[in-house]
Image (cartoon, rainbow, N blue to C red; front, side, top):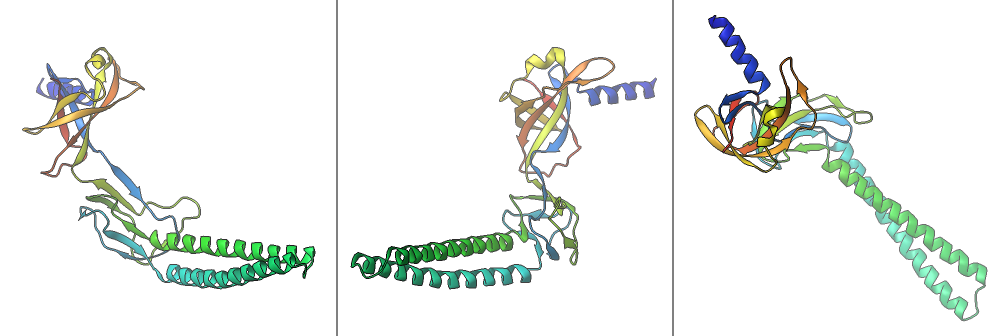
Length: 254
């Protein structure tokens, strides 16, 4: 009988049945969990974090070998400088041609040729300037920085590893925001009306109560043998201690 009672309790928790007259059993999830990669291809040079590492926003966690990206940027800037000189020369020639044409010294054909030369030079400069922006982008995103203060959940890259972004960029790091959590429960359809998005509730983890807000109410039902339920997510923040995904919690309604 004891084992039967324990089994029944586990089933009720999984279905999100009330843990008390006003409470629902829930499971903790990360509120912001992101899979990080690079939009550029290259060879991993350094990985500075391990699973469980706490990282401040903006800190570099992974870097590809920068030499190809730095070289491409230098080449692009040199080409832009060359194109700028050609553009300025063509502009001076075009201005001079227009003046001579006004003085009836040059023909209409020569006027059009000078104008077309300047337009081509200007287009080449714009293309070169765009290539500089592209090279700067590639260099910037050859590193992965922490998008916010948080914890490293997974490390899927090692120095020397080749990363290709041509098809589907591989997930190199998995990262979660620090202190931001979701308590997820399944609410029977008959009790769904007790919840509304934005409603203030309490989330109890262990013996500690936290202030939470209903973030979302699912529209697709989850059926069991006994009843139909819907997922409900409650967002809450915790400065300390560190909570882990998968921990159990209880959502209490006012």
